[in-house]
Structures are given as C-alpha cells and as structure tokens.
Length: 582
Image (cartoon, rainbow, N blue to C red; front, side, top):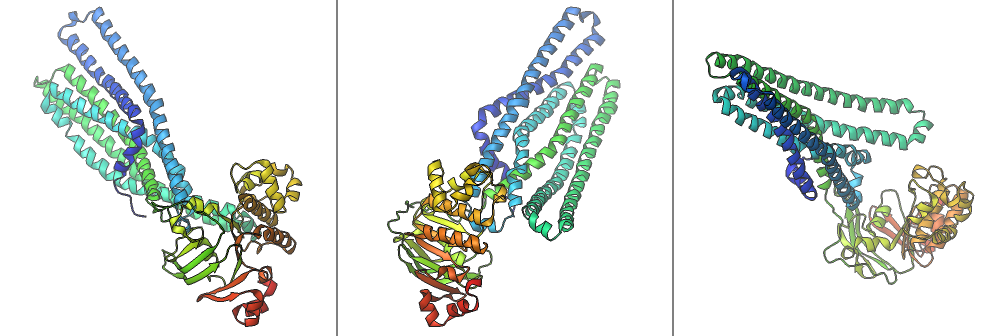
C-alpha cells in the first residue's frame, strides 16, 4: 500500500473536539518546564551571593527562596497530575474516536475490498495499531512543546549570561538534530515493517485456529507450528534491526551529551580564568546543560512512541483511504417493493483487480413470486449474479431493476432489507441461539423469534438444547451441527420476512436426513416470495418455475425442468450424468 500523504495534517482534526483539554495540557506542560528552568536561576543567585557577599545571605532570605521553590514544586506536582491523567484520557478518547471511524468505514466497504485483505491485518490495525495512538496523541504536542520551551528558554537565559559560551555549547544541537533525523527515518521504516508483520502473524494465527479441526484431522500441527515460527522469526529479525537503530540513536545522543558537558567544562573554565564568566554562572551553565540533556533524553525515549504512533496513524489512514465503491447516490430513495419482480437488462460484470469478465449480456425478467433456479459448472457466475441483486458488487454493464426501480438509485439499506439470504456456509455469531435468530430483525420479541424458529422447523431441536434458546452456540456456531445451523439461518430469514429470497446452495453440505428437513423448510420459506436458488443437487429444483443454465457463454438454456430435459441440451446431460449427486 502507498503511504498516505500529510499524516500530521490529517491527524490534527482529531484534536478539534478536545482543543480546550489540549491547550490546558500544554499550559500545564509550560508550568512544569518553567518550574524546572527556575531551579538553576535560584542556585546561581544563592551561589553568587555566597561567593561575593556572604553576609547578605541571611536566614530570612534563604527561607524565602526555599518557600518560593516549595511553591514551584507544588505547582509542578499539580500540573504533572493533570498531564498524566486528564492528558492521557484525552489521548484515549481520540483513540476511541479513530477506532469508531475505522470500524464505521469498514462497514461501508464492499466485498471486493475484503476479498483482497486479510482479516488479521485489519484486526491489527483496529486494535494494536491504535493503542499507540493514545500515547502519541497526548505526548507528541506536549513533548515537543516542553522541549521547545526548555531549549529556547535555556538559550535565552544563558545568552544573558555569556553569548560566546552559549553559542559554543549550543553548537552541538544542530549535529544532534541531524543524527536524530537520520535514525528516525530508519526506525520509521522498521516500525512500518513491524506493524505489517504483526498483521501477518495475526492472520496466520486466526487462519490456523479457525481451521483447527482440519489441522488436527490431517495431523498437521507441526506444519502449522513451522509456519508460525517462520513468521515469528521474521518479526524478531525486524525488531532486532529496530533495536540496533534505537541503540545507535541513543548512543549518538549520549555522545552529544558528553560533548556538551565537555564544552561547558573546558571552555567555561577558560572563560572563568579570563574573568569572562563568574563561578556562579558556570554552575548555572552546568545545571542548564543537565536540564537540556534530560530534555533530549526524554525526546529520545519519546522517539519510539512517536514512530509507533505515526506508523499506527499511517496504517489507520491506509484503510480510511480505501474507496467506498458501493454507496448511496445523492438522489437515492428508499426502495418500494410492491410485488418483487426482478429485471436484468444487458447485465455484465468483471472484477476490478483482474478485469476478468464473469457475466456478459444477461437479460432476464423474473416475475413476482417466481422461483428461479441457477445451475451450471463452477465458475459460471451463479453466485456472482445473485450477489449483484443486493449490490454486494456493482454491475459493470447494464442495470438491475426491482419493480421497475434501478437498484443503483435506491438506498442500500432499503434494498438489502428487502432481500433474504440462506447460504451454504452459514455464519453463526458468538452468542446464544436467540441472538442469532434475532439478528434477522434486531429488536424482535421472544415470541416472534420462537414463531420464526417453528416455521423453520428448528423449534424442536432448540428446546432440546441445554439452555434452549439461551444456549451459547460457540464461535462460528461450533456447538451446532450443519443442519441445525442451516435451520437457524432459515429462521433468521423467516423473521426478516423479505419479499425477495436468495438460496445459495443451502443444502449442499448436509447429509440426506438433514437435507430433507432443511429442504422442507426452504420450500415453506420460498412460498409467495421471488426466489433465486443456486442449485447443488439438481433433484431439489425440479419444481422451480424456471431453470437457468449458466456457462461461460452466459445463459445457455432457460426453461422448466421438463422443457430442458426434452430439449436434450446442457441441462439434460448434467441431470443425466449427476442427478442427485451434483
């Protein structure tokens, strides 16, 4: 993926809601910095008086100075508390806002985006990448602001003491900036690689754990461990290089710290011998250099947070920049389904990534209440054709109309609310049986859910479960059989009660007994609805209103079961060769 442009500029708007908190946080940072800068001045004043006029250094004056310093310590403690608590909470709120925006944007992306992205990579970006943003959002403006005050403040104060010595001491600062810029650039690349590799590890772990039954059935635990170890080693090697760079960064800064102390001691001593600097001034120089070095070390430590935060922000905007290619047109209106007729007019479709033409010149007029069966070899476009109706993908040619309304001119929500799905690969959410059925119509009452389950032929087996409708189904419904999951899926569709129904090989993965039960439920569900059935076993669609035979040439044949058998074409050969076995 290309690197998003203007990361800092694009990140700034997330501070807008918290401008007041940010400004007060910077004010507190300024207070702590001023308190820190005040100490060398007080020490210089006391030292100078002790050397030049010891009699004037009375107990009363010492107490006043002590009280002043104690007051500054209390101010510093209060400001530090706000920075460490409310400031961090501001960062956490910004992280929460970004995560909400990211999840909301992901919901808008089409199937095409997820076809090309690993779920583990997305999970890494929505969780661990944004963890670092909390620290970054709080510390970035604060650390830069404090360092700026310390450096500028110390420079101004020391120039008031001795300009030549100040210029000599500060001559090391540009060299430090050059070294920091070099190492920061290198570390940024490594952080980016590290984040990407974390996503790869997440994806590999997710893939292995979700497929754990296949892994164990083939006794491939060692193979999965080997694959994980390879990714884990790659991650270690990236971190090793990053720590070498971090070590070089810190070593170079330590070297410049020593150089600044060396300059103060050597040049300061020479200036003192010549009478150009007083002893108290040299003490102040040493203390301010210590303050500068402490500030620089904090920046060095912050550099890692900075790189992690910027990398997290970069990966955040890579997803936010993904085009929402399926959206509501400005003039889109809610779909008004009167009867449920579906019309395909010169429809064509090809995938954007490879440009391969999947469907071409599909013309089809499905009357309300008809049951249209789609058959044909794998890859002929049966599922793709059905996915075009709810606009999971956009047609690349022609148009699709429902009751005379172009589906591109209606709102996505209203379109998809009118279409029900029962698929071969049923997805069960981690939750209870009740929650999974109620997903068909959020807010449905318990009575409505039970009624839908009864219509789907699922009520009996549900009541036999350990906790009935409150039984936890496990991740992806692992505690249920294929037939049970399929019947819950049908119950979902009954609850939704859509006028248009799509059955995508809904019984292909079931045993004969389960298939018979599910098939009866599907026939009941299909009654009075415009239904598209992608057939696996041809015997299940003998009673379809019309059967479409799809091949690479498009709709090769069309007619009832008997008409197509009498024709003796593609369908006849498919049915004769496979019958119930297909």
